[in-house]
Length: 533
Image (cartoon, rainbow, N blue to C red):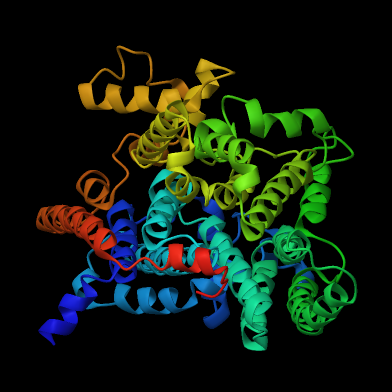
């Protein structure tokens, strides 16, 4: 047993999974993050209890039978189902009988268990995909670490929106469909299509991810010179599995829509727009597609409040490396770069005319952040692989961008995400939100919030919000300031939190040793021209 445990501590993938799990544990606040996720969790509760999907006077749309229904897809609600059952049961324990609901026991169980599960699975699948693309163990491990620590994936590990679940399913789709392309495994194609189909239940616009995965396979074949009947044969074989799978999940989504709103063809966006125009007749007739295209297209790129280059600086590195190294890329790398770039462009274009294109209460533009994370997945592995082929300024610039990305994502965890949104009601636009977040951290740490004019009127609109946005956004701090738990519980939470944080640091150091000692088959595969992992 001891020797087996020792082998585990030398296995880079196991260490990577431990890091992913501990990271998700450390960053949790115990809150679900947004009202959107709270509404989806109530839908989860509706699935197995007698409670309604939406309580009166909460977010919902009137549907069949005059009842209120959640307007979201059911995907994330299904994901949270096991955790909700467990959390509801635990909340009824006698030990919690005197505990208030801030943060609630149920939300703590759901946020912790769901985020840890998604983060660990993302590490496994991300590593798998990078190895399939013939990156070395070291390159793949550091690529996954960059995804988890240096992109907006970290922020959405703390705030339980749909984003990380969508990313996980898309990575599964890319990885297993690519396995089918190389091995002919129908089972792998089935798994990949099922994952992308599940995405349709989460957010219907993930049909773009579905198309991107198929286009990725087509590009691999095209860049490898596959044409004519062979290309057609592969296409037909793909469709025999993919079309029935995608049709099944699309029908499930439409049946769920019909159950709630009595129509197979409408979407929540059209229903929401109709309801809002009835309440506010002066709203634009083309709501929710009232934003000029150029504004919604350029906003995610250059607007200081939402620019993907500011919230995910690794995108700059990915673009730079693509321009410099394109001729050196293998066919599968070229295919992935083109497919992920088109996916990002597709999301930007799709939401460009959407009235709420920026995603409202979110860190960055949440509608496109998942596609950004996919686009930058190869940035660090490529930087490492081609270090000897890069000029010194590119290498050093890449390191600076990685460090800046890490600092930005760590800063995103410090406070609950509405803080800067409230402050901008007074400070106005444009506001560089990332810079403002660092200013807030310094002001709160030094006790200069009032002196620096950061305690704005809008922050006091809601007393509950004010307390939460002015508290370090980690569970022990929330328990100490806003929770109703006894003092000893908050103190115990701090002990656990610091212990897990120390364990995370220790395993990161252990991983550094493990990847330097790991057998690297990447160079051998590259020399042999093999695509098998």
